[in-house]
Image 1 (cartoon, rainbow, N blue to C red):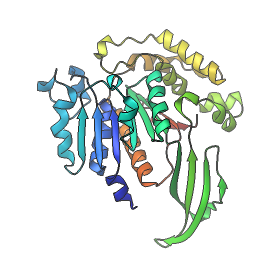
Image 2 (image 1 turned 90 degrees about the vertical axis):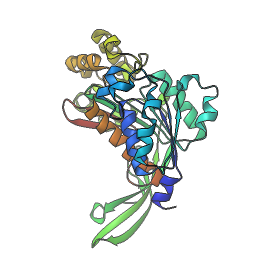
Image 3 (image 1 turned 180 degrees about the vertical axis):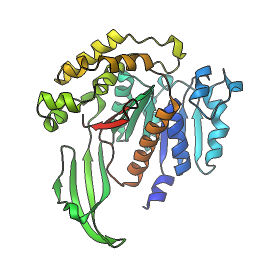
Length: 328
């Protein structure tokens, strides 16, 4: 099946129409997926005016998806758009509902909810993405379970059949000429862990000493994992969101302790954790655009079986212009 046919045959589920959800929706509609179903039961708030370009101030108080439906559909009339104006957690048979789709994306959910959704998608053998933004910060988690993809390398890289790292293996290599260049077209296999099993084994294999771990592991990794312990606040007014800096720092330390990583990662970066606490659940459109673009491109690559996918956790630090990927 060619790439465009793979996109046209895809059935995508997007849970929660947050700012990053808006960006993912826009990109997938324009890419021409077969169908897009969005589930969100929240109403439009004042703060949505700064993070959702589909909305106007006259729509405050309306159901968000009802207010945006026509504008979303206008992006690409060929895409079958479905909206469900309920809280996804209230759906009577969530597993049966999710089974209708070829890929699921969740935004703005917490750890407990990620694990619940991921367990279902694993059972159904459906690729799963989860993402959120918090002011200048954001993350992406991907679980494609076991994924095959074709990746092109310059022949000078001298790729060989076999394992390339902790999660990827080259199965087959086809050498060819492309635009007067010698290319190795590699069929690769990528293996993933569910969210419930993420840890630091691979990080420790790559960065073997505490000194390297302190230097290479962003405090946002344990910081965001610590933030996911809280109840999701996507349906709250931002002035009502109150994340304690001290409590988030303690959560960050607990994550580091559980992962067996140096506590110094947190103690050397308390200001960054304070920033994360202050900006928690604040939706900043430029950051949503970056994260949403990365998720959308990876989803398209996943659907068409091209390029190296996200495997499996990405953190974005907009304050230092860094986007880092970790295998957890």
